[in-house]
Amino acid sequence: MTELCENFGECNLKRIHKTIDLFDNCEVEKMAPHYKLTYFPSKAIGEPIRFLLNYGNLEFEDDRFDRENWPQLKPNMPFGQVPVLEIDGKLTHQSIAIARYLAKKVKLTGENDWEDLEIDSIVDTINDFRQKIALYHYESDTSVKESRKEILFKETIPYYMERFETIAKNNNGHMACAKLTWADMMFAGMLDYFNFMTKGNLIENYPNLQTVVDNVLNIPQIKNWIEKRPQTES
Ligand code: GSH
Image (cartoon, rainbow, N blue to C red; front, top):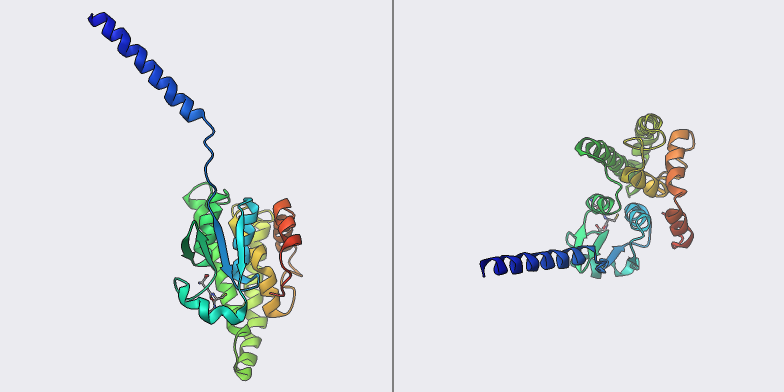
């Protein structure tokens, strides 16, 4: 009787294991998250997010609101600003945090903490650069704007661009880790905005930064996105 029971138990156990294996190997269709990006009708700091979503073939709702509707929309945003990425109904904010989250999803982060630090530091530096240009561009007092212009164009821009160029050269046409990462998406995604604010072509005399941008813009998903996205100045 004991022997019978043991055989019966063993047999059942094998059956259970087989069922678990079947479940594990089964292609369970997982629902893709629903992404909705809410932003002004421009590229600016929303575009690296759009690049990352496109790079990963992650379908998203590209919600560009009319500027005159902003006062009504603002109170609904977590901190009164955009871009806001809604993920399955949950609102997320801060463009860099969102980009980093998406970079993990589309495998454009570093291999380890050290590489992530390298990426994070250059992304934050690109953001510092953006803020310095924006301080000039959005200044409404013309005399203050004029005084900021001198420092921006003679000192700040060359200072940052020369260092970015050296980084791009040392990283074989990338902004970090000598490979394609989300830092490249941040730089290439925001370049049009930087050029709009400075009314020029910032990378004109920087061949390695041109390579960074070409490397991104030649990715088929990004090429396809650029062809189909709404044409906007900034
Ligand atoms: N640190 C924020 C981020 O990176 O997401 C900055 C967001 C931000 O400055 N958003 C601007 C905005 O919402 C548009 S680029 N401006 C309208 C307002 O503040 O009312």
